[in-house]
Image (cartoon, rainbow, N blue to C red; front, top):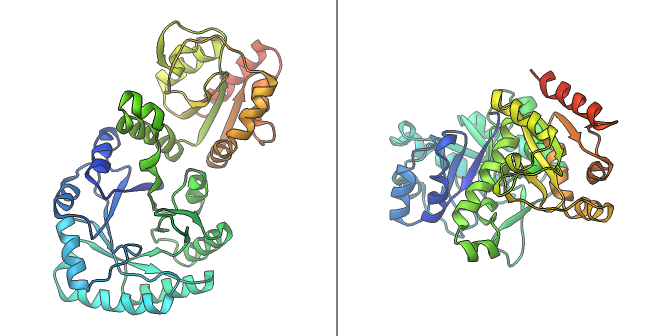
Length: 374
């Protein structure tokens, strides 16, 4: 896996959710700030599904401590990486902090316990590269890239990148100058950027919004917020990271009675072909265009229904799933869309491969595409 998502976790409940990802050892990291409670720090230290545990100084916590205290908290957390105190869009104050941090780091025993991570700050890509370069010259093995987020007023979460062009330009310039370095843009993980980050050679990026990926109504009814959130990670994050090929498959009129995973309930000839393929190999991600459920993962639990996609509903899907369509189409190298005209119209303007002709011809094209990737 090229890029790892680093899940921000500052409460025991967050770690409890991530503990269920036992099949994904070391395919993700965790990050928390130094001002969590001591009981939480113990849980963070004992978390054993990843070796990537990052301590953050808490730039948006509004607190400032000396490095002796900060590094002591990092040791309590058992971090693999500890981030310096940086100052939002202030490269000069951040560089001063970086000098202070590396002096303290080298004076004690910290270098045997965690990697000290600098932070490049700036107001332009040129300033970012200069800040990055100066910290590398100080002796930093790893330098993160901070300050790319805008803080939304009266909002506890950072929800947007300052300028996408700025992010791309900055990361491209740094990677060109330091091709062997692990790029670590802070706080910028997003499903729609996974493809971009793969291209730029990003090592990892932290992700705060994952904890809110659940349906509130369903959570109240079934008390399954933890399961919903974990399922979101498994179905919507990891496949985009590990797979290069995507199959968009229209739902089938033939369905099995009962409840189960979508890939098993739909039972038309295309689904039988895809199930046979997946039983032999795991080289593709599969998304289904469902007349009832929308654009869904192959593993989403569904139940039998009798409904067809209309042109009106296809248009509605194209609008309400525009972000999802963008995320999918920007993250895969090879995409095939199987289905009739109405289903294909959901992805109307996307430059992707499509089956065409009668059903027998489309099935043959699907089979050729499936096995051509081997």
